[in-house]
Image (cartoon, rainbow, N blue to C red; front, top):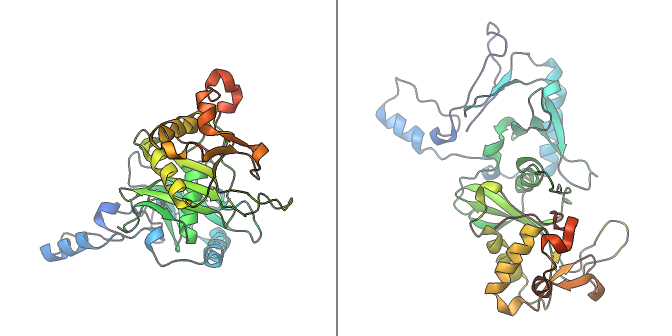
Length: 327
């Protein structure tokens, strides 16, 4: 999808629409009847670019662009609107009442937020994000045209951190009984899982020696897989196993590795399948409470054998907390 909000002519009807033409036709490309066949082929061959593929923004640029646009909303014509090209089509007026700021990070000093467009009746539904000086549909912010983004890729840019934010806070709304993710710190070590040019999951790590919080001064005593998510549409494909394998391989020199407690029922199932295949890791993988001293570690394979992750034995602890994935 490629959706734009442009200023309509002065004689346009209220909420006159400007609709993008879908990602399959290329960004900003209109194929007009008068074009030659060569021109049509060239338009189709034009590489599609998504926010994560564009030249990297600095955090300060993202914030200042949002603030400038937000301050200009009151003076903009009321016939500006956003309309999706996907079905069912949604048309929303771009007004100050339909735009809100989404805080990206746990630590809000300095503040960093992105602008989100929502329908008047539901402020929690995000239709589009304002980045790179234009409105982008949510699905496009989670897409890439880069062939190098395949599999698990370390998060480096501010737009990649926006992708992690969307996956953890916006795209996968918690179902009944699930626990929401907390916002990540701006320096969190994360990897995004890219599959078929889409972001389908992520995981974050608390490295050994990193601070457990902002007030106690305690540091993690071992690397800990802190949060993990695979989108519902991509589950049951072995991606949870892929993430767990990548985490263990990334810290192969460490004697012990942790997974943040408490394990959800789905995460326990992934660990069971993983450790059935990786016998050498059974003595190395622990469920961990910060900072990860021996009194705060429980061997995952031993607990599986003892049946401590079954719904009847754990009760409310089977609800997803810091980790949430279904393999």
